[in-house]
Image 1 (cartoon, rainbow, N blue to C red):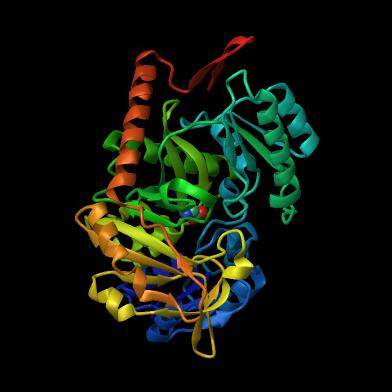
Image 2: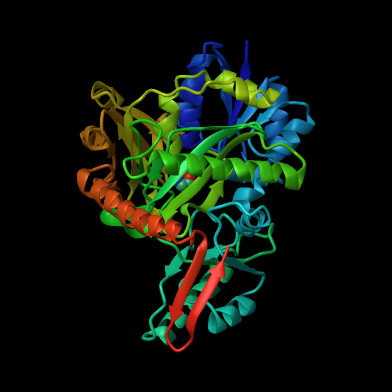
Length: 492
Ligand code: GLY
């Protein structure tokens, strides 16, 4: 019998556990988790495994647990255990691991490593950037050069702290420079403050715009097997307003692309991720085994462009694609481990998917308010509508489900089109409730006709400019006209 240790306890890990449990190998699933996620617990118990509570980021805890239960392999869900060297420790004990080791996981952890790699290997979809180790140098650069920019923490910091500032006009330049300076301080003093594992602190990138999407892939370090595209929606509230969250819902399909990304753009996106996996192998001399995802944007500069990389599945993006995977995830995992991923024919059900995330009010900025509420989910009613429930930030106390302060539940709906799936998911929202008088919220617009049209229109506009630039041989080159300074050209 195959035994697997899953690391992590969110909705993404619930989807991974669910997909592993569907395998014809009938694996016994254990989970090294920080909380008793009710969905993962049920799967572990059903397969004869259990949840072992501990810190998923602690390499010793995970490796010793894997050894204790004599598992055949470990499957890591989230990024932080990878950054902390969990895969390295597990493999040092002779147990194979699906999940990037510490060095290759820098593709997500260090945004400067990722950009330097893309520039060194001249991979399309790269952006101009500067990385700073201290705030004074970042501010000196802002004062002297930075016009339209994205200011980011140089490390993966839970998706927080990114600010995009457009600034090509002569007016309000002082005010905009002040906003940039203040945000550079915020990144340095607030967003990067918890992290001592990286020298670069602040990243300044050229600003680009366009619709975003995620391309998730399995890789054994040589071959990549792409999954269908998914678009996550990061803002907390309808119409893309409000603070950035881990993602409030996502759309996918039908088929491999999205309604606003065409086949050619899909292929270009796959080629970018493939080039990056090869570059990691060359640079580090060790294979990348697990999942890699390009968080991409369709831009006029390059077409498909890398905004960042994930060294794992996205959450909620995993919930769109894993439940529709027809191939056996244990076979896929074993092929990754043996370096034979090329032999796997990855198959998916051809359907449109919409995931709606439901969170207690307070998320994302006041997690203290969102935490500690008793949760009720009428799973039978949701399943009756053909939908699935995936539990996120939820634990169990005396048999009661209690919210953990972030996205509590993700509902997956499938249909022939994204708007139809969105409508079905919407009909399930009221089946998720808090038992006290605190309130939940979600985004009703994700997957709906209006937002989808907006994405399609934006993509069409960007594509037209990109095609014009391609005709003029301007792909990857940027020309700015700055009042009083004239024409500035940058070449990738
Ligand atoms: N959905 C964004 C993330 O997984 O980081």
